[in-house]
Length: 490
RNA sequence: GGGCCAUUAGCUCAGUUGGUUAGAGCAUCCGCCUUUUAAGCGGAGUGUCGAAGGUUCGAGUCCUUCAUGGCCCA
Image (spheres, protein in one colour):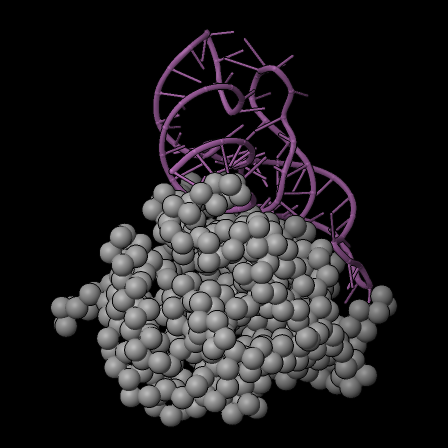
């Protein structure tokens, strides 16, 4: 390391400062505790309470303005920022001169009186200062923050230090999860945890991640849904269960897809899809009210209102209105392919009939559903786990909630007829045999559970990440996942 | 998987039709400054221009491939 480099390389400069602190018997990394008596936000918001009182604050130095024998240091703690004022005549030369060896990014503890400066800035007058940790790296630019999108995700800690909006996103995420748990507790649901590692990853259609258990010599899959284990618990007599859990789908990455994401699934015995509609509407209305004091919000410039009731749109009817085609007339893969071609919907070569129909609905029906809307009564052939409509067995008691043109939730009256369930699984196996690798193998263990008897049940799945996107006006799912999946740097 | 775009100092970004020694602000280093807050004033140093090839008298700039990311499509 040349002398020039050592002199100007920020890391080397900071290591030299650390060495000097240690030579002065101030080792930042030997400090183990610091008694914090106040948070920045509390002092600022309750200034009258704190004015003239002694406090101890601690945090990271995020700005330093030196004025000869005085200085202002802004400290970032978990709640926000607070200014501190250091004066040589208050601290004494030894403590004041610590500033020579402090940098942006270092952690300090400051004890002293709260006051307001001439410019009315609420400030802690530093009477004793403690170096709590040294940072060897520069912080992101104080003016622009951290703008490089890739780095924001790779080094999320810097993003959180530099960009207060990002903190807010994850505060809302945390508050949302807490609210959901409280809401479900109020409705007598219990929270459970079911296996991530499964021998058959079922409950929906998606390619799973595969792994391997060495001791058992067993191929295992990461779960793609929570559904089938939660229903086993309904069989068990736990009448209201839910799980908020990570699921994994081995698919592409986009602004709306991360390979691992968080789902809420809940199951309630003795109710049906209409019960799930009521629950969904109440949850979203109460959640938005709780977070924002209103059910209205704006997503990407689009006003949305979560006040119930949400409109109901019949899937088959709406498809017919849009295309003039009856679902029941699209009987084969070739029919579906022809319809897709006519509508200009591109589909993968290997797609089977239900995949194509799903895609068509996605292209012609879903984008219009901007305000919260229930799309309901899906055909049974694309709903293998839903109960049939008693008046029309080709249809099911199912709905999906769409907001801003995107699926947010999916729910149905759970199919509890084990023989019908077996028939539908068997039918799915034909598509699987024909090469649809999103269809899981037949799950005998689940059918065995169903054969012991499951009460009528309503079930709901809700994508937490997409919900947080809406609540925080985030355009990309990566903005609401602290550490989204990224390719490692070479 | 395909198309488009980006990648230049620690950070955020300029960099003209290819032309001298690649710039600015912040940060860093030195000096001054005891109520500032994008503090200020004076001075200093920044660099494998994402990587590897190629074209050219000459490449940050043009071409090819690759890497990473973003957006759109699949």
